[in-house]
Structure formats: structure tokens, C-alpha cells
Amino acid sequence: MVGCRQIGLLVGPCFTIFFKQMKFNLLGINVTMHNAPGLLMAILWAILALLTVFFFFDLPTTTVNHKSISNSLNDYTFLQAMKRVYKICKQPVIIVLLITSFIAYFNQTALETTLTPFTNQQFNWHELQVSILFAVAGIEITLVYVLLHFMTKKYPDQSILLFGYILLSIACLIAVIILPFSEPGTKKYLPIFLIFVALDILALPLIVVTTTSLFTQQTNHDEQGIGQGIQRFVINVATIVGPLYAGSLLQFTWTMLCSMLFIVLLGTFLIVAIYRSFKRKHDEELAALISPTNNNR
Image (tube, rainbow, N blue to C red; front, top):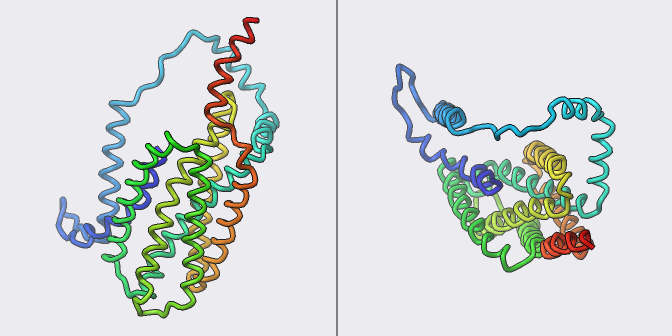
């Protein structure tokens, strides 16, 4: 699910290539590159609505005392909910995972916001070139998700997360060092810019997948629902703040990159600081096997 979301965020902009070629009439409506995205989204939502109606079903109801459930929900106050949130978020490991999740999505949305105006100013790129770049990025991120399937079987999630942040730090460092020497209108540093984008796209899936996986591992089974809600809230805030922040600093790209490098280095430092505090899958599985034996005694 996480992979599909990330791929959609990167592949979506590359549809500009097809929209530019659209110029036809549909039921008396003149379809152009300006209203074609709306038409595509309407078709996709219609298909999704049909799939939901015919293929989505509720889980079968169980024989549970609905009155007792209703009473327990009524007794569950806002203060109790906040206490549960505090109980989860006070753990240093959870705090670090929430921070790293925020940084990953903040970085991605800020990069997507800046990419089009920056490449237009620096390399005189237009919609076609930017769309091709997004298409290639979509292919790269898909391959990384496939690679992750095999990496997670050989290496612990926290190691992959740290490796992803090291790559992201290198990418931001390259951008911060090279940008002051880049002159608008020249393509001298275009290869280095493409390396920066490639490293950034390579690192993001490693971070996104492992933060979600580690968050699930560090949270108790009875707190998975509220824990995932907290993480989704942080991620949604990041996807809102990222474009707003990047958009406000379009004329000060180097300042924006310096601040992004700072928060990425902060995230890397926090991961290193609590690296040994992460629970391991093996430990959880061993505990699950040992606990019934102890209970029998």
C-alpha cells in the first residue's frame, strides 16, 4: 500500500506528456490539456466507485454483546484517548520514527514542488522534460520497492532505515555544495543534478517502508490502531507543510536545501542515537513462543 502511494505521487505528474497531445470532442465537450486531468480523475473515481460497490464487503458480524460495546465506547472519554496517545508517543523510539516519517514525506513533497520551477530556471526545461524525469523516477522507485522485498529478508529494518538516511544526507549535501556554482541557463551541472534526484528517489522508499514497519514492531498489538493513526497524522501534516515551505522559498532554493540538509542530518543522528533500542522481529517471535510455556508453569 505504501509503495503504491509513493509510485502514484511520482508517476502522476508524468501524465503531462499524454495530456499535451489531447485535443478532441467528447459529448460536445472540447477536451484539451487543461481539462483532461479532470476527465481522467472522473473516470478513475467512477471505476473506483464501481469496484467498491461490487467487491467491498463488511466483515461478518460476530456474536458479541453490542450493548456492552456501546457502553464501553460511551465511557471512553477524550482524556483517556489522549492518555493513550501520550503513552505511545513518550517512547524515544516512537518519537524518532515519527520525526523520520515527517522528514521523508516533507522532503519528497518539497522536492516535487521545487522541481518544475527550478529546472525551468536552471536548465530551461519545460513540461515535456519534467514529465520524462518524473516517469524515470517512477520506474526507479518501483525497482527500489522490488529490491526492498529481498533486502528486508537479509537485513534488519533499522539498518535499511539508517542506510536510507545516509543516502538522503549525501543527496542533500551534493545539492547544497553544487547549487551556488550553478548558473541559470547552463547545463554544466545537469549530470550532478540528476545524481541528486536519483539518490533522493533511491533513499525515500527505504525510509518510508522501514519507518512504517518499525513503527508497527515497536507498538503493542492493542495499540496498533491508534498508533497507525498518529503516524498517518504526522505524514499528512508533512505532505501539507512540505509544498507550502518549498513554495515560499522558490526564490531562495539554496536556503531551502540547507534547511532540508539540516533536518535530514538531525534524523540520521537520532537514528544512530537510538539504534540499539529498536525491538527486533526475532525477539518478538521468541517472546511469543516462550510466554505460553511460562504461563503453563
